[in-house]
Length: 341
Length: 210
Image 1: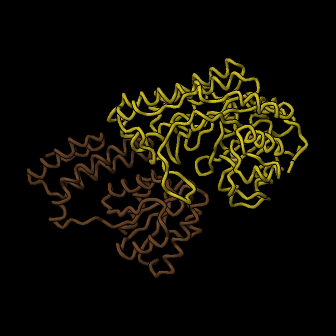
Image 2: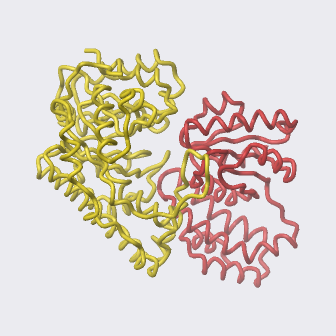
Image 3: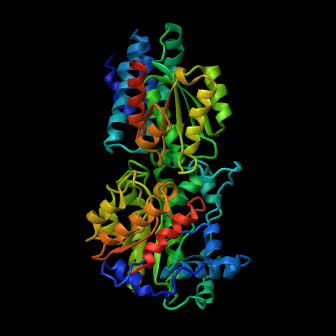
């Protein structure tokens, strides 16, 4: 299903990220569920190889009307304990306990970025339509990977019980993540990077802000600087409460755009009003809203959001992603709002 | 002995010191109820207040709770012998299909910090198991956590199952989790909703002391 004849042009997203007005609405999404991709590409859906997986995603994002396509290069995943639960839709942040002490830290099989086949960016890039560009993201962010391999509560205790080990874990994950993004940035097909790392829950940050400032944010500052030095832009996808760290995101790390908003914490309309002069706002239509309201309500809120953000610095999209439980008609209603002039 | 010292060490998460001070207080014939209320629960309540104001964060809550448990290891046998009872009993779990446990664990810690006894059923708990445990444990409160827009509908199922089993009038149901709102809680017929763990514990205490 091709929603629009619009030819993708990444310059539109660049304008959004630079908070300039655009002559048509711009949309942004990070992850589309498998069924949503099938809806958009029909019978051409093919994920049999990494290349085909990315060609399918390019088609899905093109058919939906986006100017970008996210890309993940495999091979830099941080090994974790497998979850034994079946038929569940979530994972526990306490599940990881692969590193529990200095010995397990030393034994841990750290990913080697040289195992990643970054040439996939060029190979898949041949299938980009118009001036569409890739936005690479990593397999979870620096804090998420620390939580994934240590376990959230274990990590919290480690901060007090063995801060040297805590620091070494972040040093290791940060350096690997930085190397990953630097490799991605070598390719002309890359227009921006997306740093995906959930830093908060409903009412506060996962770790105290001063701890994030010491162990997590300096890495993102380096990663974003590297992107900017190469003429690319940088987006943060971070869920949860962010008020105590927004200055860090904007002024210290210097992200160009922020993705992920929840009505329960702070509706995107308010976030835009507060932040429109400092950072571009991407997406933001709350997941509960997208899931439980009807398509007309989704359409109307999307249109209102676009009207509110006419001065620029906004791309329409979900508060987080488009999982398969979001009704097709609601997702399509949001796209319809973003495609109409 | 000055019981404020126990409270202060507890807030700093200094488990060894809390354990030693509780032992010392018992040796000095301080009432176990006072050690609990004026020392440990007072400390956890301050942590709860600071948590709500974002003056302390989850790591500080965890180490404070760990210090409280260290003190309770010494104090619990004496409390039982003295016939000191909790202010109420709660069953707490994450609903079926959902493995998230951070919020649930925090709520449990905050509840215990208010003197509420908790039976933690864990994560991904089937509605039928919750009903069985309500019959068996006879709690005052049933607390249900969910993280996703989809799994929060399980909270509604539990409430319906409690009605069907004739248990709804015996318990108050509190719901929470990232996607849950006050409006949703009211819509599914829950008795309460809280935005964070400390607020949940305050609400639970308020309900129990009514």
